[in-house]
Image 1 (cartoon, one colour):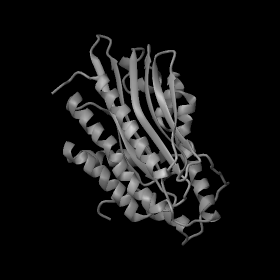
Image 2 (cartoon, one colour):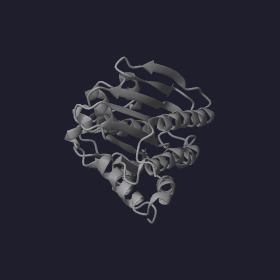
Image 3 (cartoon, helix red, strand yellow):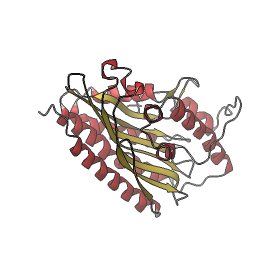
Image 4 (cartoon, one colour):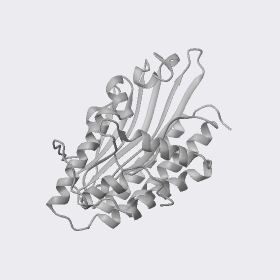
Length: 305
């Protein structure tokens, strides 16, 4: 069992993961992703892959970044104040996809690796990641498939992981000021290093590799479903919640903004192209829009109910 991290192995995997995901999405959409490679003067680089006004995706991105810094910022060291001011590096693949069809859910996935050192030079590292589904019109079959795939990805690494990471996701992707979930959840984990580097890296790879299995079947079922102005209007309203979460609570966005490590164009690719806000709006009881709030947003065990 290796206790020392191997950042180069992680980087090679992440670049390959980005390529595989983009190739699959381009095949499904029929349109190419724009490729934008960039360098960071302070240290590091990245590759942003973005699609806008595609046949299926109204907007989406699948980004790789590998950034470095001389001093760990407060947003990353709050839970480990002893690491504050230490040199660090962070790398990951992060994606958000906003299909045009309101019946096709938005999805987010991220796998990442962070490394620094203690004051005495001891390596300190951890993995994070997960994926979550944000439907506008909920379908039980879709939610169950997504959660089952997440369960299967974690099963080889311990029976306790899926319940923990599922609950973590429910708690993390929760808009406290709205008192509602962003979507139907999935899995989320951070600061994971128990069991050694190879074990944690294998688990993270399993999660990253499960993304296409979790999302593409759902997208295939919903991308051509007929819809009208009502559905598009509700989609834009719920997309507003997505914007609120990403700008107020998302740890990756806050880290990028506070550290100066984030590239603004790459971070903002997660935003939907169209969103709306209304004052104190409530869906009419008994409508499909109301069902999202009553039947899908409240956390539940999608594997057994």
